[in-house]
Image (tube, rainbow, N blue to C red; front, side, top):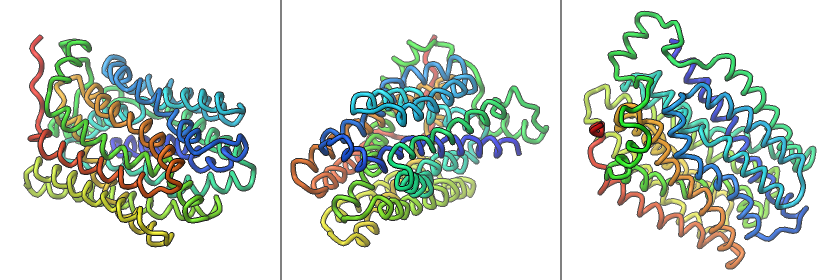
Length: 419
């Protein structure tokens, strides 16, 4: 049962990790008022995290395959705590951007490491639930984190939200250093060791071909690009909601910061539930009953993206409750497709390249963490509303569906490159 404790530790890390990402979106209006920033300038600040986060995805994947999950994440947890405190200390647009760039660098290993660790610790038949544990944490962080940070901002000013999340990050860093170990470093029961060995858990170790040759080989694979571009389309809407939803509710629906925090929590709660129940439990259940692995996973991927298209009708209502219902439908669908996407690197990667496949996917996905906030900020500034921004997200989702359907193919291991 040690694997489930490790799964919960990874989940907690992603939860805290996303507190540090969403604190800026909650504090966006007070910060822009303090420094007299336009929507376009605020969009640039909201995107700054993604600059370094995306840029370091492939190097991080290579490091994960080279030195492993444990040490890279140990260093990263300390660095992201420092970056969060730094945001509370500095002042001015330039220094806030610098602190967010440092945060993006420090948090770059988070999801590729979680995917790789899940591949180590869980057999294939449990991979859906195990992956949804950490992926759902990214959604659930907004359920509790957004109201919590909104309360801190309302009580102590906008810097209070960063002091609070920095303290939580530092506490998690200590917890991770104390308790995370890879399976080969841990005394497992004979039953659990046999389950991992016979159940298709990934083995630690580097690819025989080396990092450079492996990367070149993977970038030539149609399957890798189908997964990567489809997942990036999901990422565009995800980062639009992650960075702009509280401001949308404040600006478009005329809510207070505290009220927007509570309204934001609703759609993310729906996303958490669908992530765990559909993207995790249901996928594993169907596969364990003998249904075709590719059909199950691709169906869930595509259906989730179709639900995501509810972002389009959300653009054309001025009723806060109706808008939140449509956003909840969109986020709920996107949420249950996401853990399936994150489970695929460990299912298709040649030996020793799970970190690289996950990082290629997350690199392009996190280019959307740069593009979505900036595009949304400029569109809102130009048009005075979020209507066009939401429609753009819907069009991107339609393209993502096509990539999943036409390019991903059968979900099975890519042959190892010839050494």
